[in-house]
Length: 291
Image 1 (cartoon, one colour):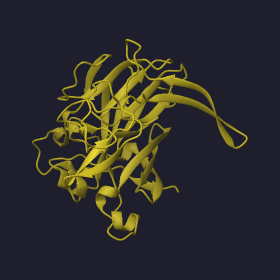
Image 2 (cartoon, rainbow, N blue to C red):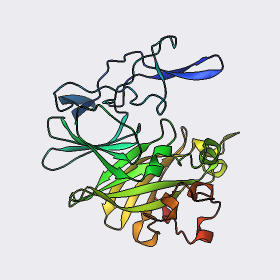
Image 3 (cartoon, rainbow, N blue to C red):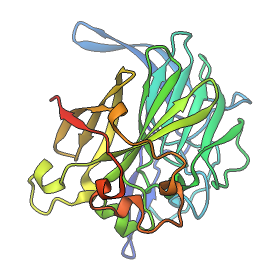
């Protein structure tokens, strides 16, 4: 599941994120199609090392959105164990990996839903978790847009590699740049070494050409899902809330920017500000329309 029921209510000119059921705990559902209906075979609660269920609440005051109750009047408590769960893959041994949006982070779970470890960006001040933490992602990922962190997650056929997509461009150096940008990022994570091994640039289509609705803005563009095809090719779902397209992308023809100046917050202009990455010797992921 996602982090549970949530929405926004405008108060004094600003949106407040509301959680009608703050005690909601994300779970993994095992289902089966059965004569046109979905039958739930098993429900696996996601729990910390203590066995206590995690929640979907924001983690860090001043970094995540402030959480409010259903009325948007009462501010709720932050919870370092909360996750905004999105992408999910299961290994042949029954373990799970989850991509989530808060830090943004990656979680490794055993077959019973217990969090074995959570992998976060450098500089994210996450304390008091009911499971171990590991700093593996570049610090620049803490500039993710609110509610637009890690979204898609794919597992290689040999189960050695994970592919993680960032839903939207980073707010790098600021929100306006991120909102106007067409450049988001795809990470490659080696499971054995627990390290990021590659980082690629995915360039969105021009918003008004992708979805010709009046007043379509660049920040409506998102990556929702990624599927592993082979060691050289991924399938990526690019969408707005109304239009979706599936593209295949070729990893071997794109520039690996991991560890480059594009991971340095001091770089100006930033990757997200580039109108034509090729002018800065960056080959973005080549896209071929599938559907």
